[in-house]
Length: 437
Length: 193
Image (cartoon, rainbow over all chains, first blue to last red; front, side, top):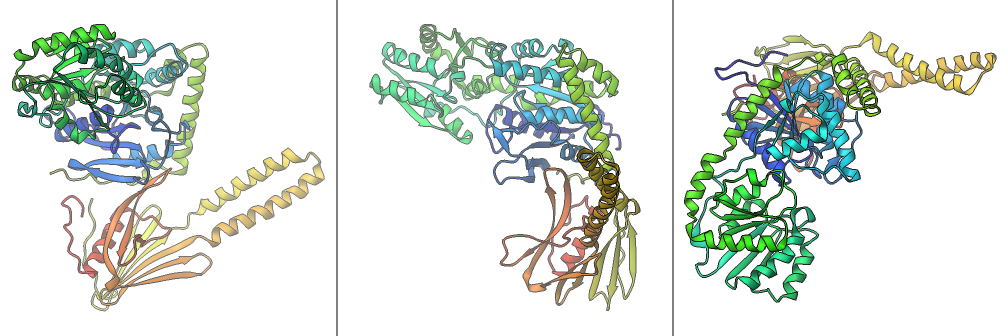
């Protein structure tokens, strides 16, 4: 493999983004990968994305600016995750790593099985590995315990890790026993060009509160059920717009019926991401009632559209916006209602265009890409790929777990040797680079 | 990536050697027809590997099942016979050569020759061919380039090479020849060829 070309700023990297979560699905992780990849492409790096097949969408697709996406034909089995076979994806990942000449593999989201497998195989192949964690996880329930162990395995051998907020960094370091010097904090950003304010669409006689989220327990749909009637009772000129769908939607509909709020609460159902801006600009206040959040991009989108945010003080939310653009409350209905009251009083002093301008300077994906480049440079300059060193790191993970991890790594290494015999690396064709205009 | 671009004239043949295949390109009758052949190189060690693997497999099964010496000797004879049969079976279905014969006025003929002597031929008239495309195929274990033809009134692509997987340079030369033959004017991207 030839060395990547040098530039005045640093080296050009050839990055492989791996995650189970990518387009055509919409979400925080998917958007993050897409925007980060686009900005890195513009800065001259080569980016390839690997994700699982979505229905009949399988094979190679090219997105804007020549972003190559491999939809590998392993179908998801549970909550969008590929079936974890440990070594099943090795031949294909190895093939992709060789033919694209990848130097760095960047995995996203701890909950993605494809990501963990790909990172393991990348380390066996000798590539440098970076991991980004997008969510906060607990420590107490069975699912979390297993997930944390898997994460500990993957992160034992990762070069650098990125978290989206300081709270998230603390959470990741505690869960995985990773030394905190290896973890960088790079917050998410928002595409401010897509989210521009338009105060003319707001009514002048009412205060419109917008809620857009998945209506699930984690996002505080139960809190909404308590808060909405209380706010409607206390503030007679408030109008709610609720967008999104999920298992808790039934509860919200029931609440609407029970308190006869059909003319004060509008339920929109699932809102495609392209239409989110048109809903946001209709409101004065954005309400976020999540019970846990590593970083909340929805708040950034709302602030970019000039809305004042009222949110629960959980996770990384306090780190997202300056205190004059957000009103925080404890995740308790009474506190949230008083927070809404404070927000309504603050409304006259809010200028949506000023807010949008500030957001433009505070958050941009190009800034995220520059900072990620720094992480890549650190990763490339870091420790070696000796099998013995890797095994030492795995062994230190725990009395039983350490030995198990070492076994998994050794079997992977043997499989790599077998694959080298079966399909030698010299015979794998290098794919030509797409010419970026 | 460079491909040697020489106009192919009467009966001139140019041969390019690759690790797994030999690519031969011939031109006939003032470039009115051209033949592109992909010849699979016979790898000496290959049957030995299959033979050896089958031998090991059968001997494991046998040792598992029997402990008597006479039975073991009979068993070894069985193993030998079985593995020879398996090797012959693999060899018969093996492709020795695939060829594309381009006749710009008439059409395209695709040929596949097997080790047993059988040759399978498909002919596509020129009016039926819309364009030639090079795509990437992703299977659960590997990823490779292939050349296919868009045929009128067929919703699926017709593969030019059924079994053989030639390198990208070869596919590009044949693709260019196919495009010239079908008088289709694509935009050749700057970085390829």
